[in-house]
Length: 254
Image (cartoon, rainbow, N blue to C red; front, side, top):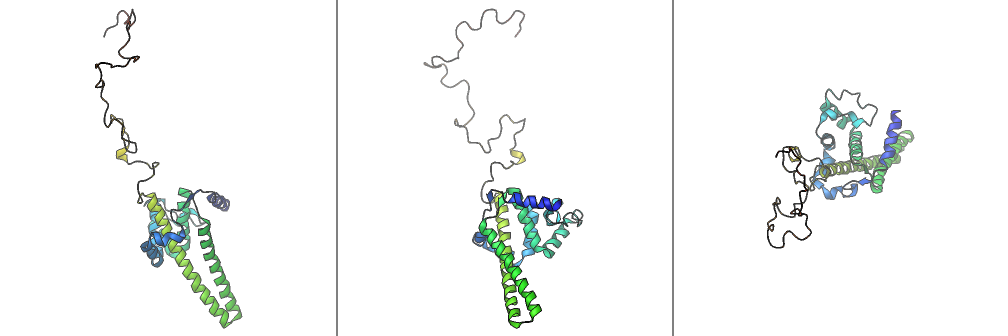
């Protein structure tokens, strides 16, 4: 039942229409310092990004963001900070992928074909390096053993680079979410002090264009009583014969 739910979620994720603010190829150009930080201190960056993805509310933390069978069974509610630290150090790849899935599900973000190719190449290279290592152990060939070591180093290099770019991509997306690239979208919830209250005579003008008259309207208009005002056909002042006879009714007191 749980596995079917995850499969349905993965299928739904393919129908998302939004895109990442920056793809994996351009993350180094967008934020080189953070990309270097993610390369050399990957687990620490994964910890900070997961906490930020939870809006710094660690009471919402679940191991691997609820995407793994162990999620919710590790005592996260008692010590979420320790559990998250254990996750990012012992299951680093899962921690990065879980944060990615969280952001995709929150903002309906799909992964581009280019990003899918990069991630797929990383996985394929790891599998090929593993297969060569197994063959080298069985055959005992020195050439195959050297080839397996070269492939293992290459796969590790690609893995660390892709994870660093991926975490930088997540950070840039949360910068966009938090309005660090400019004003937040109009759908964002306004701050409490900007909400309309019943004790305010007029609603706040935040997010609305200023009135054309530049201030509060005056009544009666300045031209009232001047020649030619009001214009002919206007409903004010009232026409002759108003109010009708018999009004107000007898007994009415002002």
